[in-house]
Length: 158
Image (cartoon, rainbow, N blue to C red; front, side, top):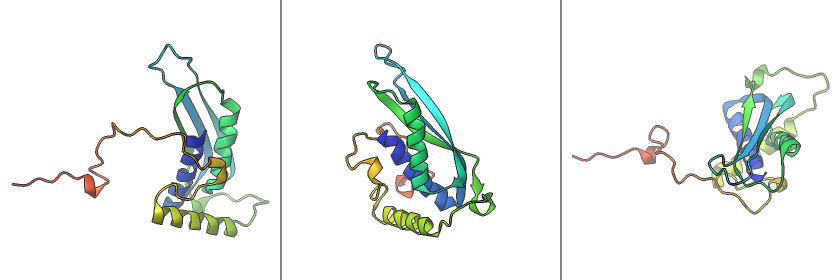
């Protein structure tokens, strides 16, 4: 479940960097379907975000609620993630009648983004995510990012 919470934190950062808010979060996870000799299980749960948000703490709480409804122990999960739906620009977000002032939370999210931007992704995390990373993203077979990372553009010499 730690991976889901990490992804929710990162999703909040990405939403804020693009000036967007989300209305729904879907948490999913599954076992390796290519290992049929192991018990198989997969699930996903959608959580409605009301009011629409880009607050990482709210996204983490929503991811946890969704995962807890479907999680089963004793399975070797190999993939997990979150998806955000119904994205809108923050300025076009519908307001609710009893909405709280979010100025403090906005400053907190800004500070969190600044720390993670300066010192690297996932430098500052919430306690619910844990301090030990018991999981690791598998990216050893990742394709080069020639179009998005200048350091990976091939150099040709004549």
